[in-house]
Image (cartoon, rainbow, N blue to C red; front, top):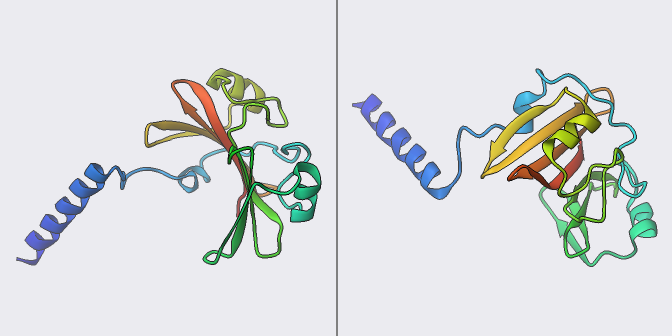
Amino acid sequence: MGIYKYLMFSSIFLLLSFVIGCDPFAKTADDFYEKTASTDLTSEAINKIAIGQTEERIINVFGEPEKLEKIDQPNVSHLSYQNEELRFVLNEQRKLIEYFVAAPALQTFKGVKIGDKKKRIIESYGEHYYEREEGGVKALGYFDKENGIMIEFALKEGKLQFFLVRAYE
């Protein structure tokens, strides 16, 4: 009888997950780390703001944020600019650990910008990438394993919608 209960609850969980829109089989960037070769991302920055820089440096470049949000668990702060199309995430030491860009006026270090196609991303960053899909958005990602940085590009209908750069452990 125990196996039948397990199968019934498992089936209900999977069904609810799909109905709610949460794919329990969706892969995260972590799932691709081991099999994706490293790409040099040491120069990656947005207006010369790179992973590891301070809150003070971000404010010197972009000014006071439009929105500042502090989160207790994990202990991070979010600085938002340009109607939240540019967001920085700082750790408890007030150092940049992640940034999100959906602003059309901004681009990666290699010149990739919102609206670019997948081909342009690959021409700029190379063939050592992973692909995954989540919620109808396709992601193309690169790891810099030597420097602990990753970049992920989100594509919808073949065009870049936003990109995310973060420290990766």
